[in-house]
Image 1 (spheres, rainbow, N blue to C red):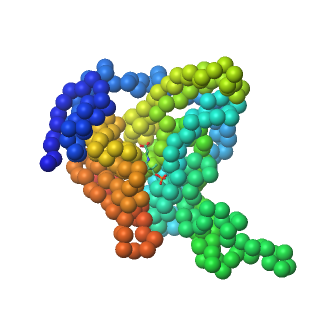
Image 2: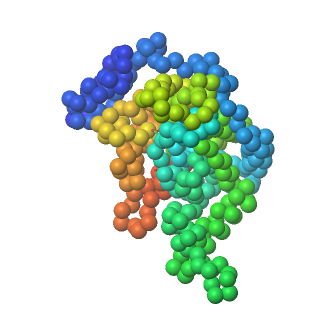
Length: 353
Ligand code: PAZ
C-alpha cells in the first residue's frame, strides 16, 4: 500500500533507512528538514572549492568553443533547428588522492546513458554540449565492439587498412553521424576526468547557456563524487605505504546542484539523476532531491535495472519509462528523451505565455 509520510528529521538518510526496513517501498515522503540541520551549501563553500581547485587547463579554448557554439545555436533558424540546447553530462568523476596523481577514487558510470541520450536529443532537433568523462562511451559508438580499431579493421595485401564487411555499416554510421554533428556545430564535446574539472567546466557551460533562458536543458546523468580531497591538503607525491594504514579525511563536495539551479542558469530546465542500489529508498530519495534542489525532474534508476527502466519524478507525476523489449536494439533512452522533450516544450510554452 502506498503511504505518504510527513516528518521532521534530524538525519534524513537514517530515518529513510528506518522506514524502509518496516515498509517494503516508500513511495513518497514529504520531508521538512530544519535548515540548520542541513549540510550548508553556502556561497562561501562553493567559492572556496573553486578558489582552491587546481587551475583548469585549456580554459580559454573551452570558453571560445562554448561562445561559438552558443552564437551558432542561439538563433532559431540554424538548420531549421529551434534554438533548443541541452547540456548532457556523462560518466563518473575521479577524486585524485595525490597532486601528481597515481591513485584516485572513481565513480561508477559507463557513460552509456549520456552517449545514447545525446544521439536522441540530436535526432529530435536539440544541439548538445556533451560533457563526458575521458574514455567513456561516445555518441554513435554504442554498437561498436569494445576495441573498434583492433576488431573492425584489417590490413589488406597491399598494406592498406580496410574495414571488415561485418562491421562496415556500424563503422560508417559512427564516423559519418559524429563528424556531421560536430561539423554542423550542433555537437560540442568537452572531456573531464576529475571532480575539479567536471565542476569547473559545468560552471563555464552553465554561464554560457544562461542567455538561452528556458530553451536550455541540463541533463545531469554523470555520476559525481560526493566527497573529495581538497587540493591544498593533498599530498604532492605518491602516498607511501611504509608509514602504515592510510588514514584520510574526505571533505564533502559542495552541493553544486543548488548553485547551478539558483545562480548559474536559473531559467533553464533542470534534470538530475538519482542512482540507488536499494530500490526501497529510491523514490523517496528522488523526491527529496526534487524538492531540495528545486529540480524540474529527477530521473530515478536502480543500478541493476538502469538499462531496462527509469522512473521520471516531477512535482506532479511519477512516470515509469521502459525499454521496448520486443524491438531489437531498443534503448530506454529513446522514450526517456521523448518524455523530457515533451515536458521541456510545455515548460518553454508556459514561460512564453
Ligand atoms: O553511465 P551508465 O549508463 O553506466 O549509468 C547511468 C547512471 C546510472 C550513472 C545514470 O543514470 C545516473 O543515475 N547518474 C547519477 C548517479 C548519481 O546518483 O550520482
